[in-house]
Image 1: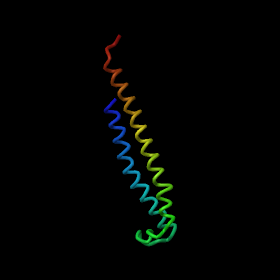
Image 2: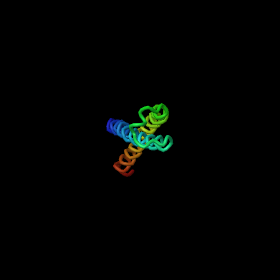
Image 3: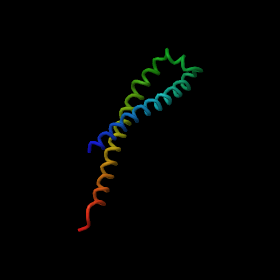
Image 4: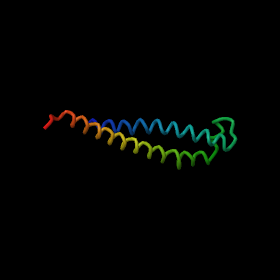
Length: 91
């Protein structure tokens, strides 16, 4: 159970890092296309980009990270049940 907890927490942390980067890049590309901005530096003065990061990227990152941890937890539980069933002697 401790191993499963460690893997679930590790999955949450790694997916949070990956999702933050991926969703941030998607938000940057969207905002650059929507405002017709040629460089990333010009997005520094854009209030809409900050709102996009705060109201879309952050909640989706947290939601995706938590869902990844939950899926990891249940997949490892099912795997542990299969291992224990195959290790038990036949009746």
